[in-house]
Amino acid sequence: MTKPQGLDNGLTNYGDRDFARYLRRSFAKSMGYTGAALDKPIVGICTSESGFNNCHRHFPEMIEAVTRGVLAAGALPITFPVISLGEVFLSPTSMVYRNLMAMAVEEMIRAQPMDAVVLMGGCDKTVPAMLMGAISADKPAVMVVAGPMMTGRHRGERLGACTDCRRFWGSFRAGKVSADEIDQVEGRLAVTAGTCAVMGTASTMALLAETLGMLLPGSAAIPAVHADRLRNCEETGALAAGMALTGGPRPTEVVVPAAVRNAQRVLLAVSGSTNAVIHLAAVARRIGIKLDLDAFNRLSDETPVLVDLKPVGAGYMEDFHYAGGLEGVLREIAPQLETETVSVTGETLADRLAHPLPDPIDRAVIREATDPISPVGGLIALRGSLAPEGAILKRAAATDALLEHEGRAVVFASLEDLAERIDDPGLDVAADDILVLQNAGPKSPSGMPEAGYLPIPKKLAQAGVKDMVRISDARMSGTAFGTIVLHVSPEAAIGGPLSLVRTGDRIRLSAADKRIDLLVDDATLARRTAERTVPTHQPKRGYTRLYHEHVTSATEGCDFDFLGPEGC
Ligand code: FES
Image (cartoon, rainbow, N blue to C red; front, side, top):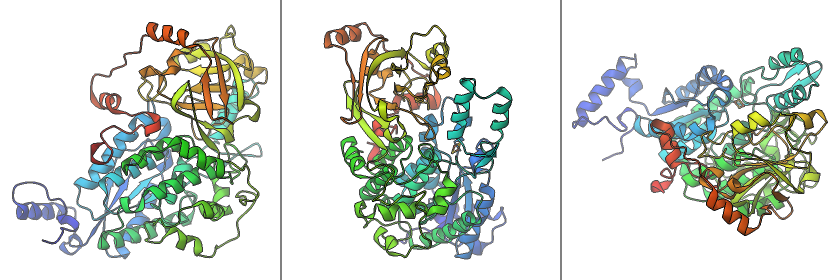
């Protein structure tokens, strides 16, 4: 029997296939389709548009362009929604819902009749969620991303979400920016459709998705409002129609272990978001591999940082696009890439890199490998007595003098405790102390928020302190910066060593040794372990219960334990 195609895919189970087919066509015709249209292969267009997602507000126009491409190439486009994750509109944090979106994507691709799918995401968690779901569904799939926002202007300077959001807020807290000016800035930070304008999580994940092979080459960084974005959508629609006709490639043929290693290289070379380490671990887990933090450090020590972009440099994503985009980075690290990987186009990375460059690379934004911003990668993994299973430090965003630092811990037991005391004028804290936040990991009530960028205590900020070592089991926005140790595993909420730290303890950070250690003797730790009461946060119902019972650690990508291949 030939494999069903188009509308005949996955017939509804009535115990009579012919009846199911007849009923489905009848109901489809109620939407005005002709029989001829319904005989074509189907490309599903999976959209994450929502009124609660500012980054995706141009999706109607993009969908129209994808649709045009599918139709012109001879297939039938059918758009369907999945949940959206607008980064700043979700509580407690979008991270909690990434797996819900991944499950929705997977199940709707599998359950509905389509031969190929175009995935439309952009805002931080939507891209990894779509990749994770599409890999597990494993029907032919290709992605388009929202593209970055353009920058705004304020009193002669360029502004882009959200590194400048934090910079202005820090100045406001320090009393250097007035309430009137902060009001003005509020309307000038995010001024167009598209994802945050810097090398934050959304931009990083778009570049990694292209490196993995799931986007058309050269498309990750096209600005959201540029006509090239719409041309990219039309071309993607046409490619998807071809994939629907030929049945491939499938995501598991594209996202292979070598492609994941290439994506790690790019993450390091662009000094991308710390969140991408978690998302890449989750994507890798969907193809049955585990990200090895020691191997990641080896890659980091030999991969140079090449791009000069905020949050750690000067430029914005629109500059990156015009400077040459991902292509410019790939050319520079080509000797370190595994070039036998294949993209959705069927072309190998070696073939892609053999094409002549359309334009010269702007070396002010994308440096040559022989003249890097830094000779080593932007991120490293740490281990040590405080984080036996690992932690992440964005060394490119850190203050050099703090990369080797020993200091006294000032501990906050929760986000609530932090909010209550951080600005207390009576707080016993000095500039060379280390701020520690507990109970902000994946299984905490806060669901691993982007709270790792602990504010500098107001009295120190007003005295001019710009950075301190900060440690937590939380995440940090890809747009933030500072000497910040994140994703400490095991997390405090399940009794990790982080839960044993007390104010006054000594902690040592050594980026050179890739270690983070709690300098407290074993007898004291044993006593504290015996006295400790591990929090008993246990949601009783619904998705939050599912999340709490099944979310894995940051080092495993915070995926659910039952969503790997064959449920592992
Ligand atoms: Fe959507 Fe930053 S809020 S990418």
